[in-house]
Image (cartoon, rainbow, N blue to C red; front, side):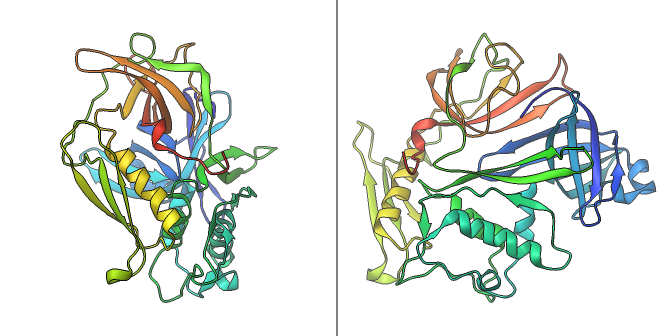
Length: 368
């Protein structure tokens, strides 16, 4: 993804493809992607403009795109929320995977594509999208990568089902495919097609991961980090012992305990994963939960200026970037994973990139 100051914001009717605006005058624009999630966009418009033409940013049926000065689309998604307050119409959008949070399996088993036994999780994701877009007025035009993984779901004893009577959205089902350790990952991308007459909306699947370890860029205080990052110290969340429970009831409920001794007062936490019906999978998820709870004091976000050390657009969702933060409160150095970012193109002093991070050691990748 190239990150340069945008020159225009475009909107399009999600169903008909009609272009509604090729230069929407958005102020306070912020946008960006995320790891295994839709990413977000927000901005403001003149209420007078919206009242004279409501379709320009009609929640639930308007696609919105940000195009850079070099003519490339940086972000695309659906407008979901609008609110008039004072002299501005504030709106929020989310990228393509947000659409499945508003869709359900009305026929069961994704229209006959399930149930799933030892099924590639990538296939389940593709089937959820294929089913959703096969219903009249439901085709958003999203393409899902043909990535193949060895991460499976469902067993002969307990297949994975998508029941018509279960009010679990298709988006929640996709979340189940990607939120465990050693499972596929995804991000949403948008580009122009070859003749720039329309856009390509894509769910980019990664296996065994998205991104890679980067030795050519870094995030560092005094070089490209322009604000002191906050550092959260939350004892309520901390635990070096996690009791994870899975499927089953009573004494038959699966249980795994992940524990370490590290010279601190013993703190325990419980974590429930009722969708997990295997001890190996439950053990991995419990280990991940413990690793997350032991990350107290890590740096979760940095704000960058554009420098040769890490030029805007040089990092990708899922990359591991060496991060060094040194100030009066923090002395941190380590590998951090880019789990998303927000571009603020109109800030004082030039564009800013706010990068969301998690310690790289929290992640385990399948097939590695």
